[in-house]
Image 1 (tube, helix red, strand yellow):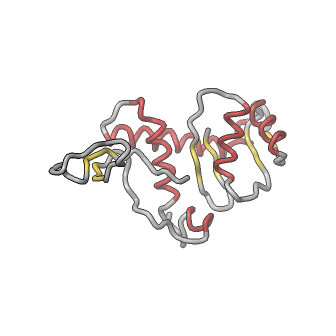
Image 2 (image 1 turned 90 degrees about the vertical axis):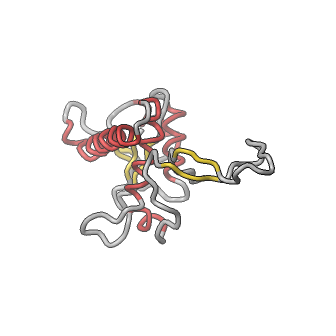
Image 3 (image 1 turned 135 degrees about the vertical axis):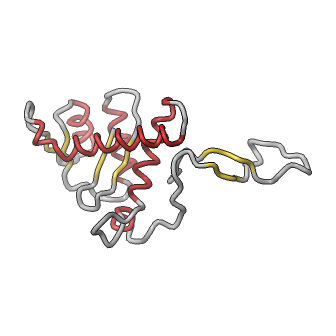
Length: 170
């Protein structure tokens, strides 16, 4: 499920297992955070209608059979798929990692100042620049393992090698 804030261009991808109202509500709620949604537009899929009704959000569906009325959402999905494919291929990981790649791609786009822009979508949405690092999907990283996950011997290296799969923002 791809969501885009038209005011800030901030985007979010929530991989869902099916087209259900609970999955749609969960994705919209995570994206919304503390922000107020003034208008939700989408195709006329029933899960969007029922999710917006449940969340008491104003909703305007695209006109059925006229894809031009949903062009912004369709372009957002197309960009997500293209960016996800590129991230998976560049990282050299199997396709089963696409949910991580897509979310990481959108996050990296959110923290990047685009051509002709003065601020990143992240800064426009949150009021300050992203304070973390911009790390590409699949990059080799060094991390300190949690004590609850790994038992290190006295002589073991304190940092472990890993592969960057994305950001955890909650």
